[in-house]
Length: 63
Length: 382
Image (cartoon, one colour):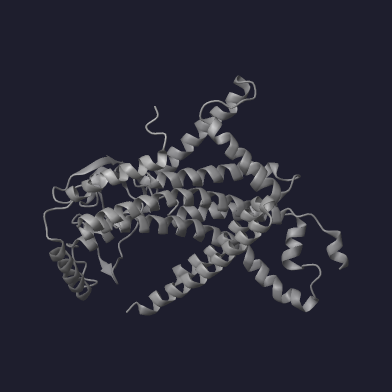
């Protein structure tokens, strides 16, 4: 009865996970290249991750 | 007193030493039998879904407990024994607007089990909502929702108690911090020493880079208040007192509404120009983009609301489900595994508590900064 909802939730988690994973990975690369800019990179990373997370949660609640 | 100079090893050793205690929590039942029993009862429950059957098996009892935790409560219950019906805790005042102010104690409800009588009116508690009924306390239901009159509920609920506690705590904490500067010759003392670097962090890393050197000062009070308010409420939600305040959408909605109102009413003309008639965009596109930008101003605080609410709610649900697994497994290895998992998850939740307070403040500052942007001349020429 709830199979479409569960599949939708899974898809959302895949999408959000891929997005946040890419952000984290890229931030790691960037910090490895320029360790002195790690503070700024972390801030930008957190903001971007939070924005994706917000959309992910909004979709989870809609599903 | 130093318990151990190797904290991590000490924590792990304590955890391992406590593991056998888990088996004492289990009644003497065969685990395999219980599992089949649970599976069987879940099936029968699915068949009777919607019939409002009293939950009997462990799984639905845990589900009911989690749902009860996520709701705001009209009484402060620390623990309750289902078999004897005894509750440990204290009752809170109920304030209703129903043809005049009605004030009485929530002990009249007996934790939702009885009909409360006050000034000739009868009230009943159903899923933590107060309905007006006749003397027999019966609810008329339609599609599973009661159709009785709901009086305006202004009660001091558990969440309100938590918020008042945090407000008073913050008032004395930061008043003490401010006072200690004059008393101590410009150096913070006492508990203020912990919070001084956080206050400076909010100013130097959140407010100034996002809002700008010129305008940041008028937003600092709001940013600091919201940061510590969310942080303390998140931490309060992790204590065994069982608060769930920032995981309540009404609370986060009001916080997000404050951010929205401050952004809207403190924005300068460049902000509105960027929404309705953005420079450097072809004129036909402006008509398409303006509604999207206008919608964006509402979506921004909406996402603030959803993010905080969902993060804290999801944390509480996952944590309580994993604690609940202990009572479902009822075996030495499974219960101790979920105990360890709950322990690790609790540490993660502390991180989330800080992170969500930071994100909310950060994004609020970002929106204030967008509302205060100065006009860039080079943009107009390109």
